[in-house]
Each structure stands twice: as structure tokens, then as C-alpha cells.
Length: 302
Image (spheres, rainbow, N blue to C red):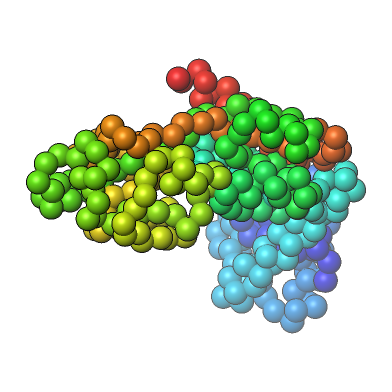
């Protein structure tokens, strides 16, 4: 049995004609007839039978066809992988992003890269507290999407692309207003309501120093999904990225707080970052270019 025999059998089965299969495969009809005959003899099975002007699969042929297709796909994938490796395409590329960043803008560049380089494993990792930038510095990731300050150039020499903005805001669920005697305009109005906080912020924030809040009660979670769920349950008030609760704000379920004595909104830049002095392969370069196009498209929309 050879892969070429299997390819001839599959083609005849799909087209129902040796003549049409010969035309598609650029073979002679006798060559295909002999190949299929030898295949049937080796299997000791009848795979095709004449029905009018067409060849149709026998019951055994129907059972064998998907297995033959599978072997041909495996051969094609093996050939593709060999070409991929011979062109020095990376075996793995990692894109890491801080959890404060909007993930929706990442998906299309990743999908386009996977389709262009199907044999490279693409790793997506999310980390907090500027961990994405640190992974690039340490050489564990190729590209990071991270909150950005220009002073970070002191840590290493970076290539950067602007990739949008982030905003962390103070909010509470609308139901919490029923627990208050007056709409909150000062942190003392919230003194008896727990402050919901991340265990570690995605950016290096000391909440007491920067935001001016000295909470009486706190509940700390280690991810924004839990933070949002607690806020939606009316468990307290807290700080969360605006994009995580955009729909709830629009529908009035969540209320953005405006307190006179504390910081209720922190804004900053998000950038795509990689080390400038590294040699990147074609897959990393393609992903970088896709992220650049995405950043440009976002800028156009804004």
C-alpha cells in the first residue's frame, strides 16, 4: 500500500469516475485502474463497484474511505511541518498581556497569525502587576501588551506601539444606594460598606496612597471576574477597569462614583512591547505587524 494508491482511491470515490480522477490527478486511466486493483488485492476487499455510469463505494469501501482520508491528511500535515521547520519558522511564540488590557483587540491578530503559520504553537498568557513586561525582559515571552510609561525604557530598550488606553474607575451596584442615607460624594459616606479590591493591581498602585482611600472593611479577589461578580452582588464598592463593566454602566446597573476626596478614575496608556535588540523570526514579525495593523485600525475608529 502506498499513499499514492490511497489518493487515487479517494479521488475516484469522490468523483465516481476513473476518467475524471485521471484528469484531476494528471494520471492515465490504466494507471489508476491498476493502482486500485492492487490496493483491493492487498486489502483482500472490494472497495468500488459499478452502478450505471458511475463507480460507487461498496460497504467495505465506505468503511475504509475515512481512514484513507485521515492518512492523506496526516501526510499533508507532515509535509507542511517539514517545510515550516526548514524555513526557520518558530516552533513557539508567546504573546502575554496584562489583565487590565482589553483582550478583544488581541484576538484577530492571533487568529490571522495562526492561519498564516499553522505549525507554530501560539501561547497566550495573562498576568497582573506589569508581569507581562517582566516576561519580555526576562526572555520568556516574545511580545507583551501592557500598561506603559515612558520611564520603562530605563528597564531595557524596547520597541513599542501605542495600543489604546485603560481606565480604572470606582463603582458600586445600584442596589447599594439603598443602604445609604445620601448619594455618596465623600469617602466617609462609604465607610460602612466594604471596599472590593484586587489582591494585586495590574499596575503598581498603592490604593491608600494614590487614591486616598483608607478602607474600614475590604474584600480582596485575585481576578477581575470575581471582582465584577462581587460588585454585581452588591457586596461593596470598588475599583475595576471600565471596559469590564461597560454594559452594566450603560444600563444603570453599576454606578460610577464621583467622590470629592479620593481619586475615582485612573487612566493610562497601553502599548505593544518587545525588546529592541532581539532577532525575531517570521512568525513573531507577522504577529507584530498584525498588532500594528490592529492598533492603526483602532486609531482610525477613534
